[in-house]
Image (cartoon, rainbow, N blue to C red):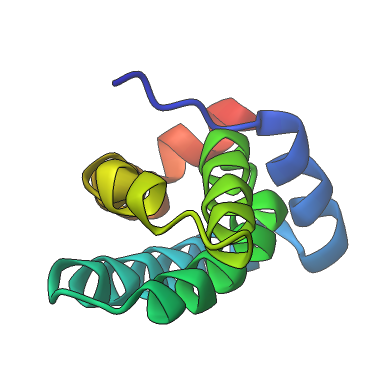
Length: 119
């Protein structure tokens, strides 16, 4: 699965908080995604998946993880619509996406060179 990060969103974030702070925030975001991934891996209820999806949706959008934000939005919507079977079928994909983004953002946060390339 190709992982895309919206560099323009991260540039705006850096303009708001400063480039040095971005690496710290990327680490925090990555840590949050790792925690959500653990929760998604421990047989969560459908309602818990909905809550996790809601939490991920806005954070992912704020950090330029547009595909993850869209997937989280779709999951949240499906849970609200009572489409439990859809959510169960798509949980592995959602979990994989969350895990992949956690790794990607952790690597990005750990590399000033990669961050500077985005700007």
